[in-house]
Length: 432
Length: 96
Image 1: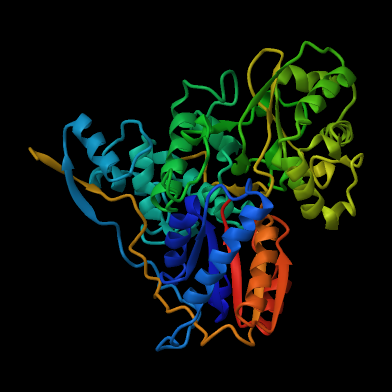
Image 2: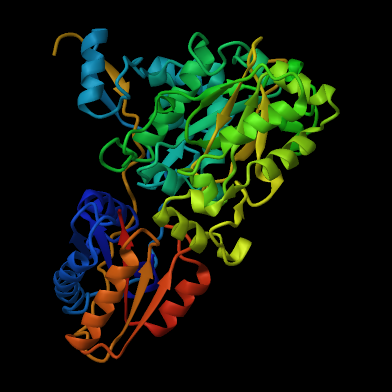
């Protein structure tokens, strides 16, 4: 942020984003940051309209940035250690009234909530293995500090069992890694949701479903783990829908988006091993997922199957093509076995899909074509109309897990594009 | 409220970020103005028009325009260093 460098700075926001700009400036220590507002949507304005808008905007910028010098010289803001514990408040004991109380305070996601009483939170904290006031991460866009305690509080609200806590803490740590790009994921108009993939013994121990209907309903762990993360992103990270979370539509995965990998039905190495963790480790991987797209194919040979999967991946209104993303596939055990039976390793599958899914640049809308040309120039050089755009920078950027039950369905998971998945080990001992 | 229960608030601890006054300047005449184009459609056109007005109407000495690789990622360290060293004011963008 330019203001943090000691420069005079002005941010130009379209009207729909001005509240986000003000809240975020405050979170960064510049609550009085000048903001010049232009009409939204700005991208559809004609050239002459922009000329008129610019004339007014220039006057606003001049007025906002010129003035007496501040009494104290700007300095880089320093955060104090999060020593404060969560506060308690009296709430209705009736479960219906309690949910209304929570939603009036914008604590919820639209579903009934479990009261985070001292007893429930203390019970959950017993599984943390860390001090309640320990800072786990700072979460954009409000830069709230996620502590062990407030993670546990949100997990209780979501209906999690106490033994889920170490996994949720690991997921929060993963989301805060810069390459995940949580700032953009939380504040974008894109529907991106955080998808949790769980590997290792912890998945079985917590009964996280990686088999039939693993991305659907029915498993308590899948339902509440993803929900807990959403509440943390909203209550601690500040992504309140319609305010800081600017999603045009969002997606159902914002309620919960969590599954295990079906390691017993996976003919290849599971994700946990690909990410360099030792056998027996438990991990959680966070992915900035755009949604799920079912691929029902009765193809019985690898070439036929890969062709239709690649065709499904290649759609033009896709952030993965515009920015060079990290698309994911959830292959069903049946589809995975066909590929493995025909002699393909996971690496082979990635390389073939990467080649087969290349898309001529002219399939993109004109404005998106321009965005791709700009954003991928350093990677691909000058992009022309017929340039074959790869979906990701390298074949290795295509994520693959095996999950689900019997059936000829696999799932394509496009992503936000400007994000990379992050895997963290979950503190878990099978003896507990 | 009838018989109540006590529950924890689920938000982050209150913000401890000290608020600072943003830097200001005494006028735009003779100043160098930097623009960070957020790479969203039309923002480059807005930057072009603003730059022209800043020079012709307000007497700015020079403008420096730099475009981010994508709206969803920060400006590069190289760009930030260049603008910090050379500019008196930086104009950024947010939104569609």
